Length: 279
Image 1 (cartoon, rainbow, N blue to C red):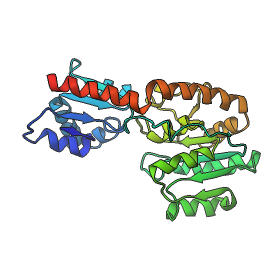
Image 2 (image 1 turned 135 degrees about the vertical axis):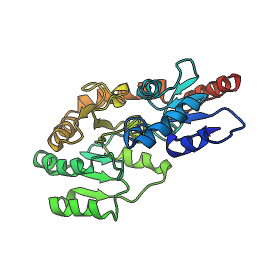
Image 3 (image 1 turned 30 degrees about the horizontal axis):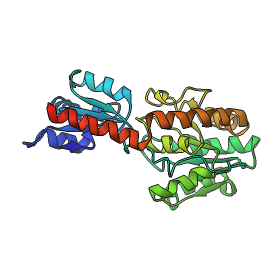
Image 4 (image 1 turned 120 degrees about the vertical axis):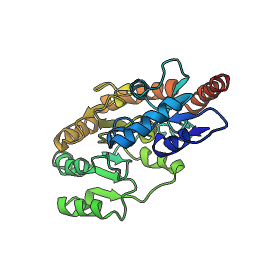
């Protein structure tokens, strides 16, 4: 039985009389956020982790944290992206890279994504790059986003987009030179890998899990997710330095092929399940 999240599927599964071994998946904030919300949540997550026969994480950091919560070192584990990997037939650089200074925020509204930082950075970017445009996925009709756009006076530079089917997200990434993700908790965001696969230069919150993919100044930039000026500086650096974007594009294409390509990841998942069956 594979519980795709610890809160609450994994917690419930660990307390059930299961007819098969239990596998858990972590999603970036299970240990860094949820486990610390209350003593009850912490105890429930510890019980689930101890009951698991195997653990799938989307970043190496969570394997280390799982050990602190009781996951035995000898049990089978797997680190691959939470969506099973990137379909590179869909997510790949466009035939012609975008020439316009376009920035995409693909994260929508989540409690651990600092969209206040993102919107406050926009006027700072526009001061130096007045032609810059910002695509905001899954923010159309969101009152908070609309209020920020009005209050900051950036209506002509911002496009609030409706949610897109997963297969159509590549079209959004192909329009952008830069993808931003100012999050305070994360594992490996699927949108980060998809943006990297499409040739977008990533600017993200400086988190241990994100450093597993991004080396600052080499294939992306990392910032304090609560600092609009830092986000603006990083965005401007990427928009105004084609050589930096080109270097990152090549390095990120290699990373995706080696560590996140769907067929490669699913082969690892199959081997992982085979290990569980032998437990």
